[in-house]
Length: 276
Image 1 (cartoon, rainbow, N blue to C red):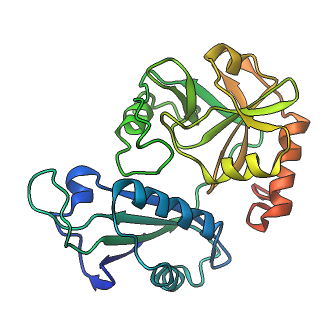
Image 2: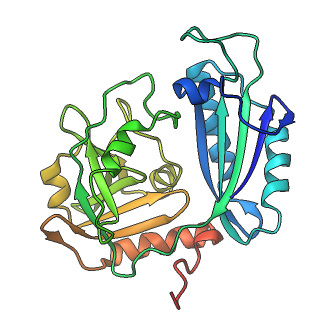
């Protein structure tokens, strides 16, 4: 993993232990697919980063600065993952946000994840629920403890992901992906007005598939769906094969949706590779 850290636009060697991102999770982040040396869906990621900064009251870095430093880091990378972390910066002890400290930016480049299983993902339900907090809903803030606790619920390598509900019992998402369920010919995804992340790939589906929309979903409605998919900005569209006792075969509608994404964004073309 290659890492660069900046205080404002000044390169520094290490993250200061007084950084509010470390102390309080006071910041936002983006996880961006790199394909042939270019960041995929860069503008969408930057727009969500800005929304997160607006919600938290953090001064966002200059977009030109971010793009230049990102391109330096990912130059020559055929396929990888760029993580962009932005914090409020260094502060003294206490919750009161400082107003005169430069923001901290961390850029990290790591390997791309392994291709998903060809037959589809195996899912489970998580016991850890997501707290309802509309003010933070949609943004990708640094506090991911609910996801950490949920992902810690299993060690079985044959289970690829877990689905989480909110404290009202409504289905929200997987721990690290958005969820879509095909019911009555429509692709349905839970709203993120009360909690959850407004996913980049999720937004692409909602904006490019006529029959896709937001609908509140119960566990029973998810389990009885004609097909399930997960999606995120790094791995694209991932068909689901198993959820608990329910099993699905690869559905033509899921494969067609994956092909549509590949046509729109070449980074997802023939991924996973045919020889995987």
